[in-house]
Length: 263
Ligand code: KIV
Ligand code: NA
Image 1 (tube, rainbow, N blue to C red):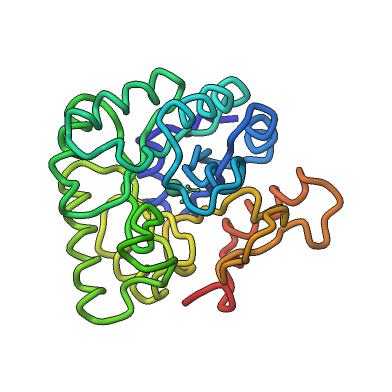
Image 2 (cartoon, rainbow, N blue to C red):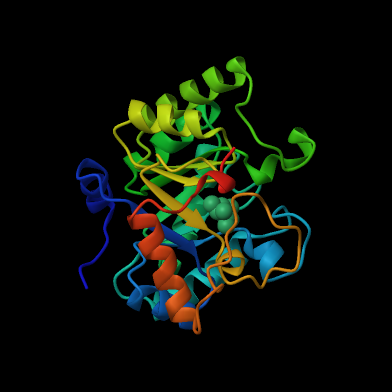
């Protein structure tokens, strides 16, 4: 299978082909997702919730993300490997670079950070030093205390305008990918159409350049409350391989997300 690379993501968006991304935390699932045709594996700080049992992503450390990243990298051949920078690990450009080096040396090919215009100097600092960056806007789980819970973002016109400005700022600073989480589907489309870089939606509508889900949600094994944008792809399937292939097909043919998964 052809290697997914940072430049090939831009090509997929330009050709109108949807990008498929899943979270992944270990070598066996990395090999499975790779053979099922997933483009991007994300070592999300969601590991704090789905693997460690915390009620937020805040306790996760760089060392923990690096441990899971190394495991995923050993099981993977073709997927692009993206690692989350956990809470507090990118509060200055210099600390961000130090911590990103840990994740790149563990096997990540890109790092993901939550934030907009305030992060632009950090994104510029990383990308100038050859660390590819994925930004993350909308519902940013590391800001749970400031948001007062996990809530849909960008619903007011002022909130939507701010998000559009943040999206321009992260692109201008050098980000090559942007995750949009839990925003109205019209806003997901507007942001995607206004950017050159691809967007990856999770609860951001069908018009993003691609989609991402937490693998435990796709398999229906997470015991917590199910978000609106989640779909259990094990329904009607007889194996995990079939469920992951069903997700890849549904994203590629535009049937996921359906209206009931959108805001
Ligand atoms: O940590 C994570 O799994 C994520 C995705 C949901 C985008 O950030
Ligand atoms: Na995350």
